[in-house]
Length: 234
Image 1 (tube, helix red, strand yellow):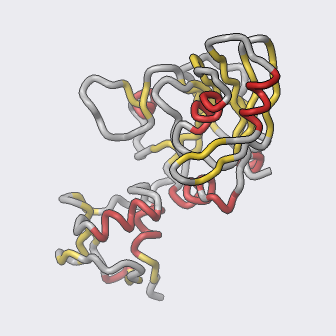
Image 2: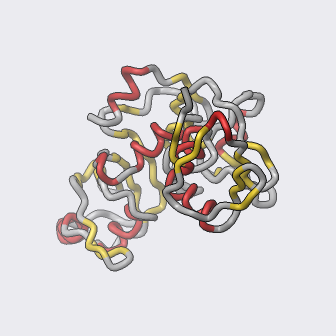
């Protein structure tokens, strides 16, 4: 029986890109079906009768799905593309026979909990706004926190024309605060603290949903079991 699948979903499942990025690849003429460039979004194909290439590479066979919890250290990037001598998260997984990528991103200087996988469907669900996953950070700032500044952080700020409101803001000590967000806007925590008059000098993610960063060294990782994967969405 023929297996039909949307092209962007296939690229996601094979670990090429998220569905949105897959659509960008298709629209940009990077994808070929049986040797012919396709730019039609929403295209459904028959896997039994189709050869798909992205760039000059034929689409890889479906790999066994793997999931890891990674303690991201400072100074490495989440992109799989190499930019000069920058250290990448996937460089810590050298030797793996599957093509891995990060679920969402942390800034180069942000540390903490990060999921690494080759499951595009899982990654797409985890980063989609409808999942409303709570992300918990500890932000260390450049000066002593004040009640007035904290209250301003709680009121949120505007990022890219959208008013972003943190789910929780709680002082931990004179120079650090715990912040929970669900939006996932770029550099969201740094924007929030700046609105309160503070500069974030260190940012560390400790939790995704109910999944907490365990006590493992920065730069190391552990397998993520099915039960823990579900905790992300709780």
